Image (cartoon, rainbow over all chains, first blue to last red):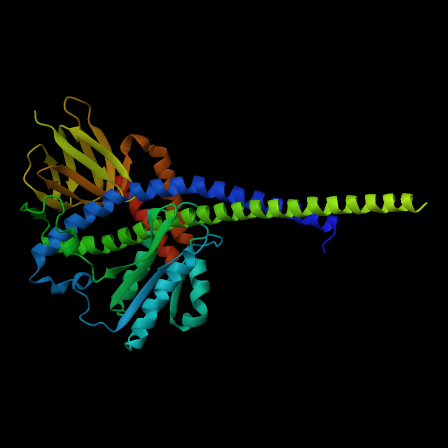
Amino acid sequence: MPSLKDLRNRISSVKATRKITKAMQMVAAAKLRRAQESAVAARPYGERMNAVLTSLARNMTGGATSLPLLSGTGRDQTHLLIVATAERGLCGGFNNSIAKLAREHADRLLAQGKTVKMLLVGKKGADALRRLYGKHFIDQVDLRSAKVIGFEHAKMISDKVLKLYADGEFDVATVFFSEFKSVIQQTPKALRLIPADVGAGAVAASGAGAVYEYEPDEEAILADLLPRNISVQIFRALLENAASEQGARMSAMDSATRNAGEMINKLTQKYNRQRQAQITKELIEIISGAEAL
Amino acid sequence: MAELKFELVSPARLLMSASVGQVTVPGAEGEFTVLANHAPMVSALKPGVLVVTPAGGAPERIFVRGGFAEVNAEGLTVLAEEAVAVADIQPGQLAQAVKNAEEDLADAKTDDARSRAQETLDHLKSLAAVL
């Protein structure tokens, strides 16, 4: 049975923990708002880009083989998995759910006898996957120093990916990230980057029926656009990830704060009971002492 | 005069969305001006200055780099990787930035750093060239 002093110490330490988790929750809430804003603000660019790309790609069906970014290398042997996670922990199941999705994907590919290569963005995902897939890692990107995710970070990653592709290091690239749905819901998602995923989904895009004039010709524009599209998609993934991370952290810290509160209540009750018991015990001792006289 | 719906979008956000009189776009194969009811077209951009003229207003000059312009029945959309209002750029600052970038390039040790420095320098020079 812990003494009164032990209980007092525990209560004060849990109180300190609650203060920390509460502060982290508030910081995450503030960061979440900003991250959410930038994720929403980045959407128009991606959407327009997709619309133009789709209409271009549809006009090109015929002789599009000269653009490997669109049509692929014609093989399906080597897969590059770009796993984007957070740099920090303490955000619930956020990092694990992305790592899990990537792991399932990798296992499936390996079972089919394909070659898997991994490019890790963020430290936590790398930590989670290193033990099982360490030998498949080819590169790691650290965004720890970045306060705000900028387009240049996405560009840096896409440059790496494009270089690997140009060197024939892989045939298919898929990016794993967490899509931000709401504060309490983030879904891990896989998105195919190369070959570009244009088609069915975006047919309803604006101005689909219009006949465009191209300057320079379609192929030159597509060749210019496809690499850009990769950076834009990665940028989108990073922003969605940033918002999801803060959302996940916020709800994780919220429940941690609540748990700490519950624990404090329980401990306080125990403390009071024990104190009362001690007082009663002392009284009984005094009374029975007096009666004995 | 009919108004043209114009949108300028950068990867990070929607920079401008307005009804304007005309817009001059630095296309890859030469500058062109878009008025309302322009024929649908898609053009790549070269680094240059986008001139946005509101109906009956003073033109606004915006430096854009990398991207493309799309004209459709709804209006003109410019997707630029970078966009900076010319009025926000000070000449002295730019010259200083070019000098810094040149020094960075000279100091760069790894290939990675060198290519990054080169990119910054090219960007600044293209900016300086159009002003």
